[in-house]
Amino acid sequence: MKRSKLLVIGAIIGFFIGIVTVSLMAYSSVNNSTVSNSEAVSERMSYYPNTETLGPNEMRVVACGTGMPTARPKQAASSWLVELGNGEKFLFDVGTGSAERISALQIPYNHLDKVFLSHLHTDHFGDVDALFVGGALMGRQKPLRVWGPSGDTPERGTKYALDHLTKALTWDLVGRQGITDPRGYFLEAYEFDYKAVNKIIYEENGVTIRSFPAVHSLDGPVSFSLEWNGLKFVFGGDTFPNKWFDEYAKGADLAIHECFIPVPAMIEKFKFSPQSALPVATQIHTAPEAFGKVMSMIKPRMAVAYHFFNDFDIQPDLNDRIRSTYDGPLSLATDFMVWNITKDKITTRMAIVDEDIWPPAATDKPQVPDASIRVPYSKFINDGKLDMYDVIQPIYDEINEKYGLNEKQD
Ligand SMILES: [Zn+2]
Ligand SMILES: [Zn+2]
Image (cartoon, protein in one colour):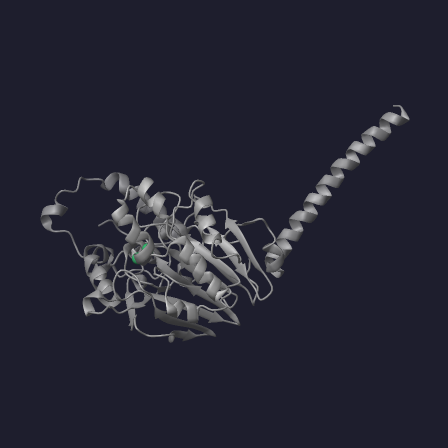
């Protein structure tokens, strides 16, 4: 073979070795940083759940619902996950559809046992049932704890709502007795005064959560602040711009506040009458221009607008309206937007999620259920069962042999 040909072949081989080496280096740097340097990982363009360790001084916020009470595939209703570098996790609102988004984050459900509700509209608490029962089935082996405001009458408060939700789930819960790990099927409601002004409602492990009133629909709605390790997260819930948010959200690192669909779109796309669109979008809720005015007052490190359909033909007008009154850092939230927050930096990205996820492994072993507390069928219903003994027994035999058990058919 000619020398020049050999040189060409050598160069080609060298080129490929180079590519493999560079790829391996890139792969190992990503893997190393997953373990040791989360700031480096958050330099990735996207967030892949369950692949990034949070730095000890870092906060991560994930939008698990940013939409409306009107369901759509792209946006669930209000829900926000706050994860802290000390391992603590908190959910603010669990609006309709959000349990599905939460599941995509692949977090063991024992870590998802604390929920804070801004108010009792279904777009803010409509998936509490899904998180409660589904979460227990997916490995939450402890009660679901839910904090929420009182109302101006007892039956308009969180405790009434959750006690009656539990009652409504009687059939569901009784049917699971003696069949699954029982520890997750308890819903604990912690109701606090909706008129509390910047009062502490939760304080544990260096985390302080405070509540202050919001102005929305009826007496009762609130906003929250969460402070930890010198970082401040504020979640406004639904509200007309109010003096408490102006005072207690000031200087937040991340400030989430509703920003409603502009009135023209409410009329043209939502088919509201002008007489209804005006009060709903500007008086019960916060118009984009008013959102901007609020953010200009509190000056957060990052302002987050939500509670609108975040589409290509809504965003430009909504953004212009906000920019008429606010020129600071801004995120127009949509589901699976993620913020990594440290003292020095806020990174905003989108999560890339796996639609085929299964429940993450529970942090504790499942408890074997006590079959003696199962509620039996009536004779009438039991007599309706067809004889499947011959085809079901091989399944029992297979599993009994594999796991060393002696389980028997009903
Ligand atoms: Zn509301
Ligand atoms: Zn709402």
